[in-house]
Length: 445
Image (cartoon, rainbow, N blue to C red):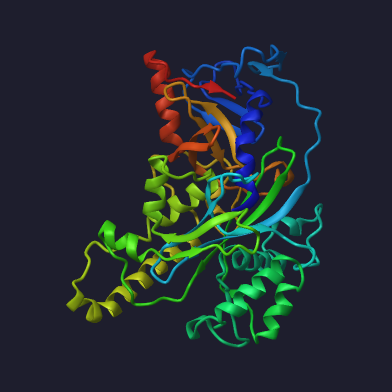
């Protein structure tokens, strides 16, 4: 997912700039609100301590508001916001509902050694005109974003999401020989020919209609490079080939596309399809690096794209292929129902009201700008909130996911021990830890 994840480690720098504010509607109110750069987190338990993130931080100023509790806050930084660069990315499903990830080389200046979705920046050469940096369109799904997503996927993986004009996806994608594809990749990547014009010479057009918007991510304030990244879901046409269940068969039948050397192999080493569950399991065991946006989206789709519980025998495979194809279609239908549902997700009766009404925002419109909430003392992981849309969209009515947070260790090699958890569950653990004196209360940022 392009540029956003590469800047997330720099979000740790936000720790020294996020300002907690302790306030109450009246001196006797048990509720309090923690304010960060990304907004408010309301808690109903006053047992959680507010701590300065680092001893080196300047002492907070205290202000007294009539009829309210003492307010503590740190000075806002004078540094202006870095401009946002538009980019797009695709969560691509194989004919057997596996997910494509690209493995970055360890020498890369971004996403080094990480596994990422195909995608990248919008190009003024290929996608002109681009949305203006100060226009609302820069934060909205549009033609330029869709063209860039398909072009970048082609450049990075060799998979061409194109079809003949007037042809539906059910009729298959545009068939092009490997020789023509590789020659086209080099020309498009080198800006020798515009992507759409090259496709026209083949009698095809980008399959933009089958891109499904699936969240937008905005780099938080702080890093010198910031991006507004439109994510899409794309489902390759189904086949009846079942996914193998044994590790040996999975290894044999994983669909692997070695990245050609049109760029000297400086960006990716391979493009591999595997189940979302396997990608997440490998990340949890720290076998691979997944940045929070990739981990989060894989976490969402993994609940729907489950591998078959049994592997048919060779004699049974032919007669069960159609059944397996129907099972894949059922999985996709369930995923699409989830993505199109509003509110998202249905509110459990045990949870408080979503303060920013983010559940009413469909996944196609959700905007997430990860914000550091606090550091868990029990394991030292940073807790990232996903409910706020970022500085540029503050007050716009847009938002992300209030119900979930992400836990992560940012190491030198990249994010580790990444996890998606329920917001209330994580906050409850902190309250209980602080009340029990077990060191559960985290440092508030």
